[in-house]
Image (tube, rainbow, N blue to C red; front, side):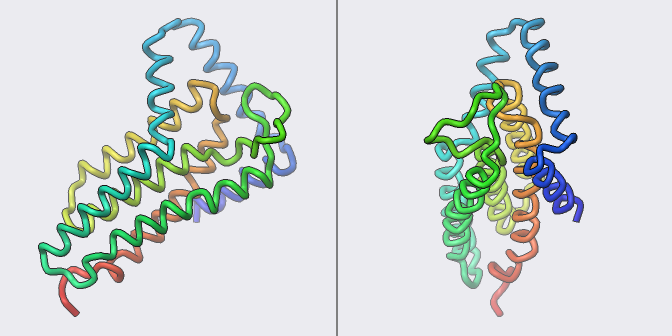
Length: 206
């Protein structure tokens, strides 16, 4: 419920250019000042590298690879519907642009440099890289956890997704609220998948 409310509030504020958006330029200016103060090429390269983890490559190949591994492990364990992870992963990969691209076009929000959108640009809200990383890596982690529970995988996935968001904000690729909204959207989808997976991929034969 918290994720849904936060997503609705942020989207409403973006749509009406509300006062909540004042957070974004304040954070952007603070990050720029910090970058100038630190003047660290290493941190700047790290920010870009973390941002790149939210691209379709490598996120979708990682998702599909983990789904294949999960299916193989489920088959080896003799589980019913062992093949389920593969279509789930494909559905997740297809769902990302279906959710993000229309929203970007609808809100048509300019990026952190406050330049008007070009004719070939969809807009910055919500963050596609954030959604791609959270949904792809999150789905991969849930599929693997269904066949081989490992808390470290979940923590590592959360760290990567947080790193992608931080890299996007640090590198001036996205506003903070673009990132937060995508985390909310992705969190809702992953919570739904978490509840559905036991039915899709049971532990034992039924």
